[in-house]
Image (cartoon, rainbow, N blue to C red; front, side, top):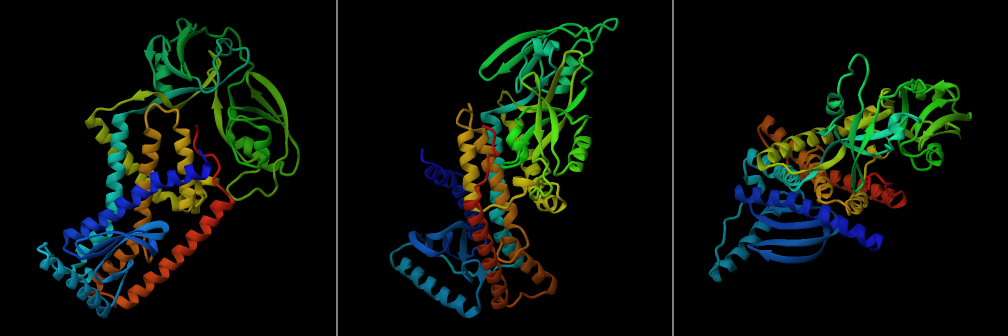
Amino acid sequence: MNDLLLTIISFLVVLGPLVLIHEFGHFIAARMIGVTVLEFGLGFPPRALTLFESKGTKFTLNWLPIGGFVRPLGEDFVKPVGPEATEKDRAAFEAYQQELDELGQKAGKTKSLMEAGPWQRIWFMSAGAIFNFAAAFLILTASSMIGQPGPAVVVLTTIPGSPAADAGLKLQDIITAVNGTPVRTVDELNAAIPAPVDGVASEITLTIQREDQTFDVKVPPTTRMLAGRAVGVWVQETAEGSPAALVLQLGDVILKADDQTATNTDNFKAYIDSMAGKEVTLTVLRDGEEQQIKITPRENPPDGEGKLGVVIATLEYNTTYGYSISDATGGPIVNLPLGEAISNGANSTVNLMRQIAYAPIAIIRGEVKGEEGRMISPIGIAQVSKQVIQGSSGDSTPYRILNFIAVISIALGVTNLLPFPGLDGGRILFVIFELIRGKPVNPEREGMVHLIGIMLLLALVAVLAVNDILHPIGPIIAP
């Protein structure tokens, strides 16, 4: 399928329904508090066409595909209007209602948003985000019931000449059982290994899942020291265009930098930083063999990247059998019953809300770097959506797509609650101010503030969209 077409489809599949859910939340809330809805719009104006009309509400499609809106009586797009404009809209709506009466159809009463109480307006303005959170909960619950990979123990590497290496263990092998006892975490695996008898360890049988194959391997304990390697660092990811991307691969184990042993990430990074601009020889273990690799750390790396442009983690070996393992996902598919799925869906929703709400703070503190901290436009979301859809093509369940949609739904809800003019959170802020001072802000003044906010948001989206087009988001979803 053409990449552009797949990107467009991905955008429609992921973001389109979530915007619809968000605006449907506002629409339902307006109906609940008796507020007249003049327009339900997908996309931002200018209007492209009117899809249909129901009970005086126009359902429209608009040219800017970056969101949506519900326009109640008393608002223009997403900002309040003055009494004169409100009464003009009211007269037009009541004239239409009169036509419905004459045709024998039920006509409702008109009520502007400003005629609703402050708490009713807060409910209306927050309902979109609440519906997004509820949708994420339902999606995550469904994903848990349909099935998704459980926790797994994955092999990172083996020491050359060790029993684990001789048994043929490879990078990304999943260990599902030890001596017939199922294991899902490193702690469970360690607990399943028999304790040494008189100081002598016993042979273990590991059940290995490798792609679509499952088989057993016997791993005896070592009878000698394994080259003294107890620790190292392993390569998890490299940044595009970085020095590391040219010479290092996923799963490489860095043993030394020049003559400095890489005992952990901190001492390795400190040495590399001290060698900026100078060539360094890395001793790397790859596919069971040691290699000498030349690399030159950058003096001025891009923001969010280190001198090499590599993501590494400290590696610890089991020196009895010679393997290094880690907790991961990718285990056998787990289908949770309804009760557990609801609990898992609720916990996952709350955790994601916390993570997304904390993200801006993490970016400011420098805790999130590189692509992870990049702001993206709807075009960027479409690019990531395409990656998710492509990466999930071989999955036995749609868990990856469902979980991604849930993340975007929560992000959409959290973003709209930010206290910025033009967003739902900014409008709620004005209602809170009204509750504190005892009377509302002049609608024209509030409308001007929101209009400025909307213009700034549109400008930001335009800048981000250009950046996403010129610098497409690199691979961030594992296939």
